[in-house]
Length: 221
Image (tube, rainbow, N blue to C red; front, top):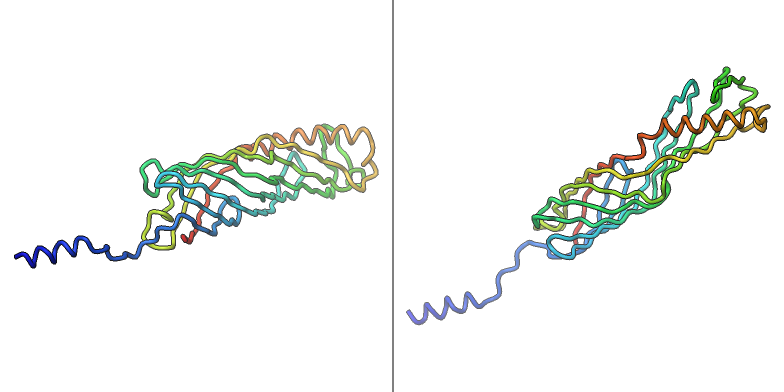
């Protein structure tokens, strides 16, 4: 009996076997979504708080009609982001807050091949030439969202992440100009272009609150 007790005591005192669990607090990941492609770094302070830094690049081209003018629009969203993820239940669910930094703009270009109305006046293609410009948003875009991330709650190196939320881009500032037209420097056309800028600003107001949806795969160290 005494021998059995000694064996049991020795077993309890011995180091526990190493399990296939990774205890690292740092992770790198790749992802994509409405912010384009992204590279991400995470650091876990504790079971409830993780900080993230991201870099992202997005470029999308599509046509947009404002009044009777068709513009080629190029959405550019590139830069970096900093966030704090709070896991209120110490599991994979989190609430995220932070901001995206960097360029957020829509390049605009139109080359009419028939008379068009700019502002409240109709001009010929020769008078207008080519319309060029951009709609730019705030460089700083606050973000709030929630998601699921098992990077630091799983047993292995790999983790999956999904997040949804919204970033506040703010109101657009539109700068439009006529290039190569016979009226490009004419005060009448310049005045109507200012009116056209205001209409474009109204037309892109849906981008003020930009939806964020991202998916990613992380590797934990």
